[in-house]
Image (cartoon, rainbow, N blue to C red; front, top):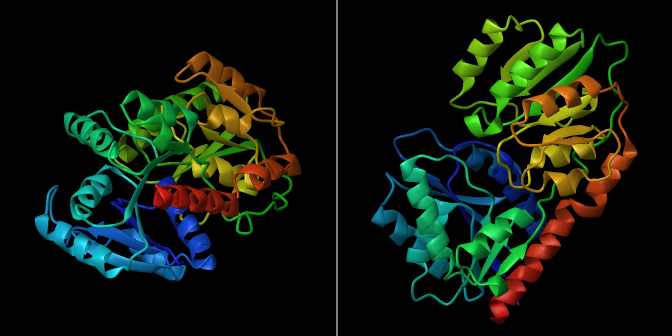
Length: 361
């Protein structure tokens, strides 16, 4: 019996959840699960980058026109696609909008409903309302997956049955991210981060801490890859602290595979996280990680040489960890952690088992 997996995602860029979804679809294709990626697209806006990224990887992708928060035509189109997908369909939703539309479109259809909770960002009234609605709707799904233990606890606390909640680690294509020799004879320690430029990533504090380290004589340089609503504020902080020579904001980059090995450390000091793929990618390239104590990051980094975990938003601890960093060559022990736990093949195995459980139910 072949399974048709229909993934549904509302995407505003190529971030961690998108890269996880792309890696999962590629693995599912290899297993004959016929994944179809449906992406919400507002006809008044440029097409989401996820559409092109999926097509480049040979993933079957479909644009789902959707204007505004509630579009009944989008519900009808999604329902038609689900009905046309055959008898053994798994609808896999990946955010609050897809959970809402997927729940409506699947009413009365014989299919399995699965969702992955990647984590929640933003604290506006609108986002809190959507989050509350999503958690309520998830109670009716056959299986709900969390990418970290803390998210799984939040799901159970929201009233979702513990028997329906599973925790599955994110995974990456380990062949794409390899250890490479760093450029020799570089001045200072080169740090990097890749993240959406938004408040929950705590990048202003990182910039301020790095400026203070340099004032103490520690030669640190930082590259911040990404785009987002906080770009102007971050650039202003760099100018205010006179750090233009040592901190750069080159914009978004969707292929950092060769970059991680050039770093002395990858830094991600977010206020909240699920299981960030950028951390897994850095480790796969043998790059040490300095991260905040949130989401799955303490578990991911536990016992790894050269890696540091600091309390969330603790400026003194961040300063101490930055000042303690040392030049390091890529370390195969870091890559081995990824091979053992965070390969895309392992992630696909876990989701296949989850689908089978949902279908049996």
